[in-house]
Image (cartoon, rainbow, N blue to C red):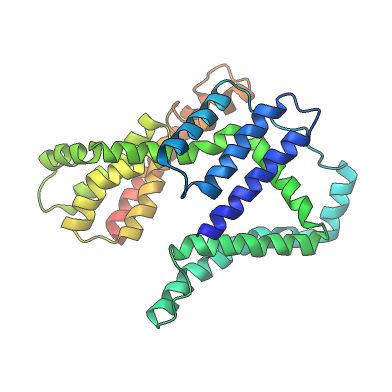
Length: 311
C-alpha cells in the first residue's frame, strides 16, 4: 500500500508544480502550497511526527477556508479535436474506466484465494491493492488507446483535481472526524443508550437501529464517512457482529449505503444538496433535498430488508 500512497502523493505534488508554473493563475502560490502539502502528507505521513502532520492539515484548512485555492485555466483542446478523438475510439473510450472495477473485483477475490492456498502476494488490504493495480493498468491502457504521452495523464489528473478543489480533502477529514468521535467514546455512549432500548434477542430491531443510526448520524454530520466509525462501533460491532454473529462485509457495505440515504436528505451535505440548488438558481434552496427525500427513504427501507436477509 505504501507504493500507492507515494504514487498518489507524486500526482498531487505534480499538480502543485504545474500550478506554481502557471503564471496566469490568480492564486498561484497558495494553491500550489495547498496541493504540495497534500502530496507531501501522502508521501511522508508515516514518518512525520503527528504534531507536524496536524499542523500541515490545519495549514491546508486555512488555505481552503480563506478561499485561496483556485483552479488553473485548463486546456481541454478544441471541441472538434475532442469529437474526432471520440469518433475514432468509439466504445473503446470506456475500456479504461471499465477495467478498474473488473480488475479490482478479480484482485479482491483472487488474492485472498491465493493466500488461502499458501501464496501470499499482497501485504495489507487486497481490495485497496487491487484498486491501485487496476488504476495503473487503466492508465497504461488509456495512453495506448489515445496515443497520448503519460505527461498528458498528469495534466488531466491536474485538471480533475483542480475541478474538485479543496473539497477533495473532505472525505478524509470527515473520516478522521468520525474516528475522533469514536476515540472520544461516543460509540460506547451510543452502545449504552441503544442497549437500554433494544429488545433483547430480536436481531431485526438491531438492524433497524444500525441502518437508521447511519442515516440519521450522516444527516447530522453531513457525510457517511464520519458516521460510519461511530455507529459501527456503537451498534454494528457490539450488537450485529458480537451478539448476532453477522457478516462484517455485508454490514459495512449496506451500512455505508444507509448513510448515503441520509446524505440525500440533509442540508449538511452542502456540496450534494445546496450547491446544486444554487447552481440551478432554484428559488427553494431545499428543493433538491425535497426531490431526493422519497428516494432516500425507499433506499433506506430496502437496505433494512437486505441487511435482515443477507446478514
